[in-house]
Length: 262
Image (cartoon, rainbow, N blue to C red; front, side):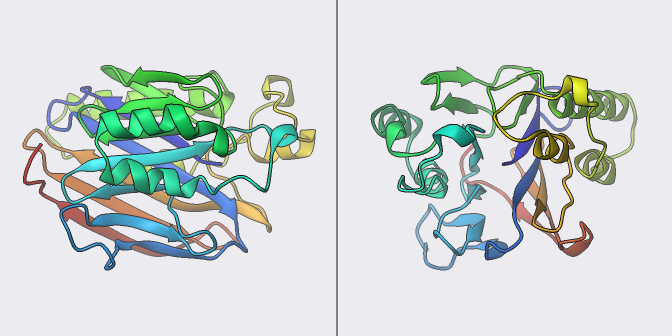
């Protein structure tokens, strides 16, 4: 259960800014973000890897194509016999928008509920498998968690407002985009007041635990943060942090992508 924030055409030097957290059970084995060696063609992928099912939750290819997935929180409808949703991101990274859109419309029922954002960074599309709705991420700020795009969950509203403030302050200054400030937004562990929590079918205790942008608990929590920025020349920088069970950064790295086409 992840959360993403997007700033589209809101900064004069960086028309795309994406901040993303991956939340997962700590016992689920994971390989941190890396270039996948098994794909040597033009669709070579940069992504973390779910070692249990083989897919990923977020990635890019070397041409600057992006894919990221969040689970729809519907515990009462969860079917463990359905296919792993991590494979959808892999498909979105190697297929055209037209082909993946057609595939999603035909095969979404084979998976538990999900959202997926995909496409070139300057032309991102969101597909919601529950409503079967496709939306273009228009100019502005957007948030995506475990419900619909731009829903009004407290942590979505909080992060989107903080991202808005950070981007606007940076856009009016000569300083570089403050990457550490973006990480700080994604590491906010402030939980929402009980009366503002969504009712998604979980116990109140779990709704409370999951109400913060950054989640820390012994069994489940935020495992990685990615900050992805694309500049006016199409160059992409990906910042990646991994966390241990106590929510402390255990590894940090970054990658540069200069797509041959934009």
